[in-house]
Length: 114
Image 1: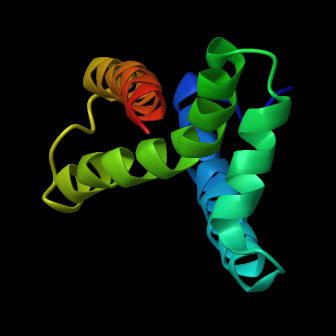
Image 2: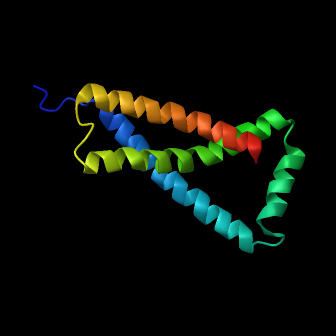
């Protein structure tokens, strides 16, 4: 007999934790590149030189930006939980998918503008 049934919301919560780890990797990776010879901007320029097009560079930038954007925006969702709001399962799923969509759109917009 199964004692515990995994809910879909646990996947969204794991995604939040995973993006926190990725967020840290991006921040520490950027800090390490800053002290490397040439500095951070030279490595960005190098990547732009070898990228076969602007579309691929936007995709790469959005993949790097998405964990930061998702983790930051989803923090507002967690603040709402701290205030005791949004615990009903339908609201939980709706807010989770909304945060996912908003973070993907925001990371693409930021990547295209940088």
